[in-house]
Image 1 (cartoon, rainbow, N blue to C red):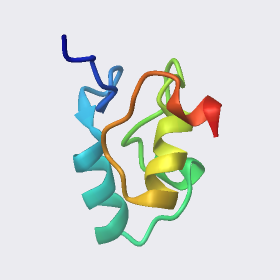
Image 2 (image 1 turned 30 degrees about the vertical axis):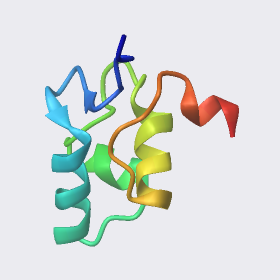
Image 3 (image 1 turned 45 degrees about the vertical axis):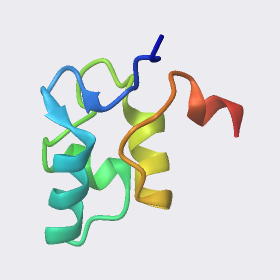
Image 4 (image 1 turned 180 degrees about the vertical axis):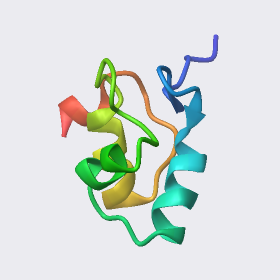
Length: 70
């Protein structure tokens, strides 16, 4: 059975691929900068570790809990 992947900021209904494209277009390098643009991670914050890892690796799909196992 395929495992569900973490692929989006749930609160903003925005995929990590969209966040990545936005960050690149606006030359944003941190979760805080993305928060200031109100694109992700401004409500529950559960996506923040995934966004941080995305910014470091360009990866946009994660195994649940992956950033915590690094």
